[in-house]
Each structure stands twice: as structure tokens, then as C-alpha cells.
Image (cartoon, rainbow, N blue to C red):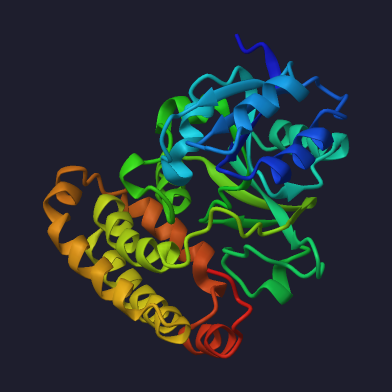
Length: 312
């Protein structure tokens, strides 16, 4: 039996001051008395000491090395909440109303395994971190069924994660949410985007390597599809995604990392095949139905290639 209604897992890496602002906000939560776990992902800036000194009731997990975004697993493994929320250290705005809304939605929708939050840019107020199957200008204020997980702003049923497992460690960063989403859907659960739970993203620059997302977004496309998708979906996904990451890399001057990613994906292909467990045809059909409103290549090309403020 779980000891808490909610566990909030915060992943952080060398962002002590940004993290402190978030934890101060979380310390004001009164509803449900949530369990707070901070995963210090190999920080060298005194993050763990700061948490223990200023927020002694919060648990701290020190990984010792940077495990990437899948470092969230270290907090999720020990979470005792009925529902597990994962947020990044530069996400603000989670409050008691958010928790109440999440619990109500989970209780009223027994098949929902994960709920993605609405994420707004902290400074501009515009929608960001959008990964759902329609244009953001059309769907940002609607409750949607989705095939994606916004990893840094999402809530899960713990009982679901006990079945599907956690994030795949080989992915490090990027597509770990889509990989887990495939397993969630294949186990008969649904994933929803719930705009009533709204947070803001500061997009802190500290600890963000300039090249990293260009490399991992491309390499992990291969990991995602080989591990999870049947041949037709595999080819369609790569045909859509590889030109997109190529455009990003060309636009921002990181094309060499795109080629390195493709090369390393080919080298790692035998391990991908070893882990391969394709989702069912029924799950593929469900994903196709949900993704019918996903924007096409030319919409994404226009939006992403010519707008340099689109973050990767």
C-alpha cells in the first residue's frame, strides 16, 4: 500500500539556485502532503548540501554521475505515492489546485495511465514543450488523448509503472518519453494532455550542452522505433523525423552531430535488435488514430527552420 497520494520527483544537474526556487514553491504545498524526492544527477555545485540544509524534509538521491534525463528513474524507483509526478528543476507553477485536478482526472478515468501538463514559457507566456498530435494553436486549451509524454511535466499511476517499467537507460536524453509511452499504450492504458494543470518553463541555460540534443534526438529515433515499432511504423517514423532533425542541425550549425548520431545508431543496431519488443498491431492502430491530426512535414519545416527561437 502506498504511503502518499503524490510523490513529486525533481531531476536536477548543476542548477542549485534554480532548483532552490522550485523547492521553495513546492514546500508551500499543503494538499495531500506530497512526498518530494530530489534526484541530484551528478551535480558539483553543492546541490545536495543545499537541499539537505534548506529543505530537510525532502529526500535526496545522489546518482554520482550524470545519467541524463533517465536519471528520473532513481527517484521513481523509491517513490511511495499512488501517483508519481516528474518535473524538471526549471519548472514552476505546480500548486494544490494542480494536485487536486490530477487526482480527480485519474479517479474519473481509470484507463488513464499518464497525464501531461500544459507548459508555458516562463518569460513570454506562450505554449512550449509541445509534443502532442495536433497544432498547438488548435489544441493547447483542449483535453487531448496523446501518444507522447512531456517527461519534465507529467504524472503517472505508480501501479502502471510497476507493469511497464521505467525509462530506458540507453536513451540518456530524448525520446525516453515516447519509448515509455509506447509501452503504456501497449498495456491498454491511455495518455492524456490536461491543460487545466498548467506550469511554466524557465528553460534554464545552465548544464545544457549546445550539441547534445542534436545528437541524441537523431540517434534515439533509431532506438525508439527499433525497440518498439513494427516495420511500417518504423519506416514512416524515420522518414518523418530524420529530415526534421537534419533541418534543426543544419539551421543551428550542428550538422556534424547529426551524421555522428546516424553512424552511432548503426553501430548500436545489434543491441537495439536484442531489446526489440514490438507493440501490437492494435496499439499501432490506436496510435494512428490519435496521430491523424499531427502536423505534416511542411508545417513543421516552416515553423522550425525559420524560427530560431524554437528550442531543441
